[in-house]
Image (cartoon, rainbow, N blue to C red; front, side):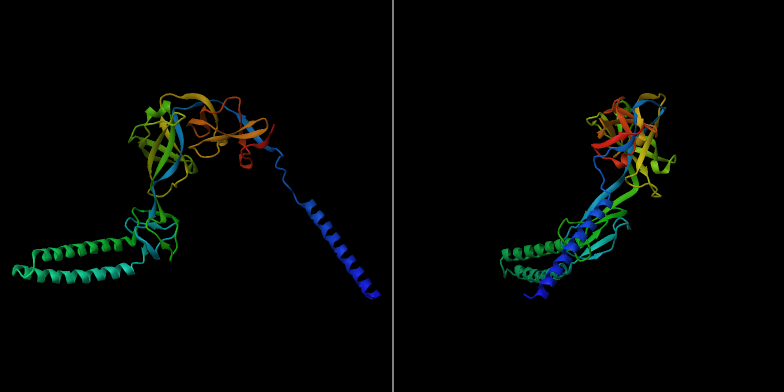
Length: 351
C-alpha cells in the first residue's frame, strides 16, 4: 500500500469520526430541548367537602335519555349483498326496503319447481282418468297427488326465501350503524345495520327507596334536559322496577315524546316531582360528578392521591346532589381539575 492510499484512509477515518461526534452532539442538544412530563408530579386541583343542603319541595332525579327502540337488523337469508340503500344518519320508514341479497339462484329454483308442478298436475289429471277406468291401482294415483303437494310446499318455501332477500326496516328510525358494505357476502342472521327510534325517548332515573312510592305508572312528570336549561318537556312514567339494586335504588323509566327531535339519546336529563316537604341531607356540588348518572362517581383525595369513588346518589336540585352513601363529610371532593386526572393520580390541593 503506497503512502497516498494510507493518507486517504486516515482522512476517511477522521471524517467518519467527526461525523459521528457531531451527530451525537446534536442528539444530546435535541434531547435537552424535549419536554418530558413527570408523571409523578402532583396535579393542582380544587376540592370541597360534602355538606348538608336543603332540597326544595320540587325533587329532581338525575338520569340519561335512551332510545325508545334500538335494534340490530339481521339478514334472514344468506348470499351476496347486491343493494344497500342506506347510510349512517339516514331516516327510514317502517317497511322500507333497505338492502337486497342476490336471489338469482332462488329464482332459477322457483322456475324449476313451477315446471315440475305443471308436469305433476298433468300426471295427476291423467291418473285420475285412468283410475276411474280401473286402469291403474289406487296407490299410484295417491303417490301422484302426494308428489304434487310436496312440490307445492317446496314452491312456498322458495317464495318465502325470496321474500327474505329483501331486508326491510321493522320500525321507523335513524340508521345509527352500518356493519356491511355493498358486495359483502353475508350469512343467515348477520347484522347489517342498527336502527334507532327517537320519536320518543326513555329517561331512566334511579330513585331512592324512600321516594319510590311517589311514582306510579302513567303519572305525568316534568322533565328537563341539561342542554336546554330551564325548558321543560312532559313525560309519563312507563316502567317501575319491582326490585331495588344493592344500593336500595329503584329503576324508573319516563317516556318523553320527541316529535321535533329536540332530544337525543345519551343526553343528561332531570325528572322533577313536586312535594309538600323539603329534604335536608348530606350533598356535594353537581360539578364534582364524573362518569354517568347510572354509576355516579367523584374523585376523593386521600394522602395526596385522587381516588375514583362511586357513591349512592339521591335527589338533586341542579346545583347539588344528595349523597345517600359512599361519601362522608370529611372527604375532600375534587370540584375542579377532574379532566386532568385519573384514578390514583398524585394531586395537590390549591389553597
